[in-house]
Length: 266
Ligand code: NAP
Image 1 (cartoon, helix red, strand yellow):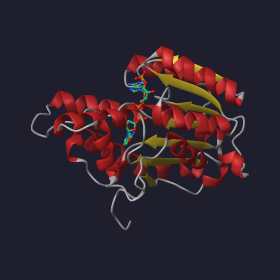
Image 2 (cartoon, rainbow, N blue to C red):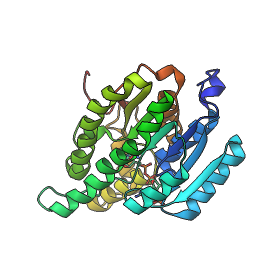
Image 3 (tube, helix red, strand yellow):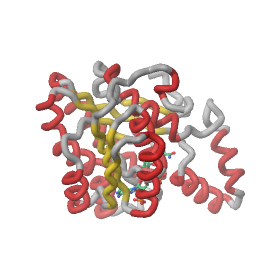
């Protein structure tokens, strides 16, 4: 189901979006929702096969132009290749794999540098490259996929907590410096969504606790007020709305999509 199916015109048909890390999961959900609104895409992931398959499905389903660039978005060379294929980008969705879980006492400087590179400095570099063009044209949208861990720490994901909170601080200031030019920057904070990443985290818990994957999942459902995981389609629809003409006054916000999982009033 696309947002357009509910009768809402997002007003972004014909625009161009770069959606990073988008062959699967939440990034793919965003790519599909934007394509559903008539947006042409530059898609990216490291693995070429899954990327080409997702790009082909989007071309067939929505009839938009899709350029697929297989590259590691967290490397300088990968970013350069993606950016050279992405001309006049109106919409940027930043995303990359999350850092591995672990224990605070095990992480060394190199672990932090890697996490900061992937989940803080990569989105910042992409914004630095693409914000000037958006500002010149007087319109732009940036959505960073971060995590609920920005609002409520997940202790074993300390590398993620640290890197994503750094990005959040950067966005809080920068979004307010570019808003005058019609460019908005916001962050989407996923709670648990049904993707490969969730399966791998549940697999780790199942192994550690000697229970089945199904049990691990049921135990986690019980901690979420909605009693289920989110879907990449729901996530993509929220992203597409933030990228729409209707969301121009939403600036520098951190929007949780977590089924109520973070127990907080604000
Ligand atoms: P996923 O299902 O594992 O998909 C990750 C996607 O990103 C794949 O297309 C993958 O393709 C691509 N990718 C990963 N590293 C990349 C890199 N360095 N360069 C380019 N592409 C890359 O993950 P997801 O669940 O959608 O999660 C997306 C982000 O949201 C992650 O940072 C995750 O930590 C965060 N998050 C997810 C959840 C959740 O419940 N799913 C919750 C909170 C936060 P290749 O492997 O082929 O590159």
